[in-house]
Length: 377
Image (tube, rainbow, N blue to C red; front, side, top):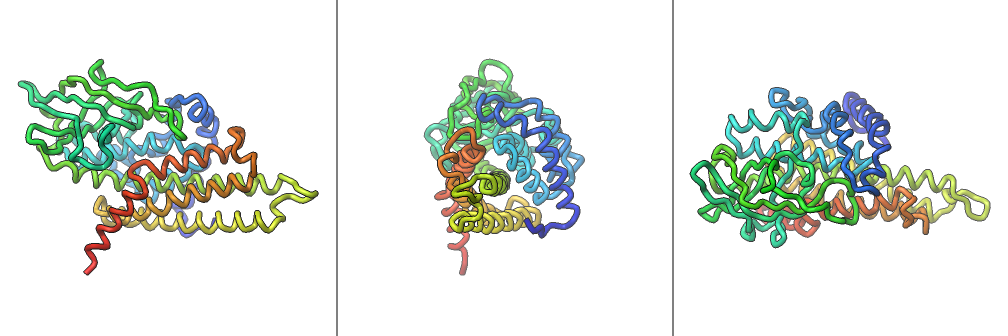
């Protein structure tokens, strides 16, 4: 890899890589095979600044850039992609709070999220709702002391072990409002983790909210108009998934090269064969194109904040699709061994496909990009 980064960011990458190799590689089977979330990783992630790197220190962040945050995701995902989405969600939840909350709410709730002291969840998706707020069935009704929330959220990362989250619900005016919901008590109940293609151990599950009573100050900002918060928060989520997809591609390439150097056919390592040359060359080219697009998207977010919906959508569209193809080629280099669960590239292929679908499918990203095209005069 030829680095185009400033020296301090390249040093940061190497530090993240060393930490991930030491602390997260031993956790692969715990997440992927046992489907358990590794709570022992949380203090290590907090020390890295994973939960709040791009936010100001007065809020518990690390005064870093979105580019550095993307690099951190990339290096964690090179070792253990499933772990990245855990801390990414804290950053997304903190961003939604910062976007929609009052100064008092931000000062109260954002610092513990950014320091990794509590785990967050992001509650928008429902069984009948993809990205359309009109289909939200979760309802918030007023009480004498605040609000009562009833609903069913689906595909919620960290659902089984989260402490608090933001929940999108229809308010009495049938508009979308945003609420802060702690998870203590039986009124907030997570189902058993959903069996998915990849990303085991993330606590991804359905979350039920049954007559959840919250005080009035848990309404974030004012009622109504909060779908815009979802769209802005998702620029963070999509950037994180793109970064993790680049990490998967880097790991896929390394595994493919390692295997090709040691696997022999007809008395030669298969890396001597032209067919393998072509696969590896494609992998290198697609990886580096994706990495540069990721860094462009992160720099756009550094410059424009959350007002980067088309840029980040195009980044996720290209990078996550490419990650699936690069992981597929790594499987092909391994031949039939590539589909064995004893081979790391089998897991990488599954995790790559998951990141292509989460935070909006490629079809959704195309529509977001198209809206920007429609604005061209």
